[in-house]
Amino acid sequence: GGNKHGIYVEDINNIRILNSVISYNGNEDDMIGGTGGNGGGIGITRNQSNDVSGGLLSNLRVHNNFANNGGGIRIYAQDDIIVDNVIVYNNNAYISGGGISIGERPAYISNSLIYNNSAGFNGSGIFFNDTDSELNNCSIWNNYSDNCESIELYQYSGITITNSIINNGIDLNGYPASLIISYSNIYGGQETITGLDNDESSFNWGQGNIDSNPLFADTSNGDYHLQSTSPC
Image 1 (cartoon, helix red, strand yellow):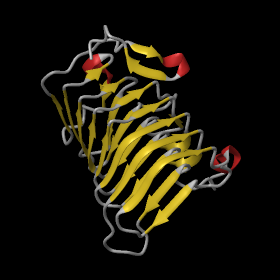
Image 2: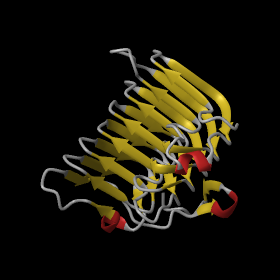
Image 3: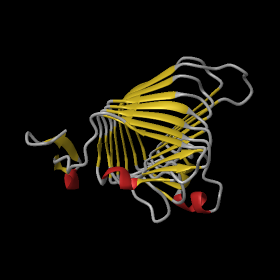
Image 4: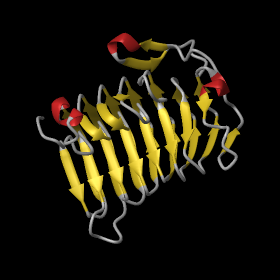
């Protein structure tokens, strides 16, 4: 802990970050001053290389990190990253992506829990920017901000969500953006999805979606297992 990035990776193919706890990186004072960097826990970026791709982030706990963008994890311009079985919580971004920020290339997030993160302006849980990405079998819960929704799709983002549990809203901000949701529990229903007044953006409320209390075991103590009576 104590660095602007817990882990920083640039211009490397087939990244592997596995079986780790990444916590207490970044500094809130730097963040407010605009020098907090991007990717408080993990920062992955393409800078000089024209073609970097691939990677796996798996079995990680990423918590209590700070950054300007991507408080927990920021992935920028790296093709086809897989994020699987990660728990991302209590991270903060001064600008966007309190939990995770994904930009300019596709990513696949699955079997993950993202909760109690915050951001100043865009995407307190996840911020998608100019990316076609997928979210499957994830819980995105109790991420918060006075200024934004839990998930934000920003310009030219196309996101497919399946088998997931989400509260505190999804925003299509910028255009065109595309959102497809199926077999998911969107707490608060379609009314929590904003930014649909733009004719260039599209939204498909697919089959199998519900709007119910998911009945997590004990969120106040970080236990997000589902009770036996859960509708999910």
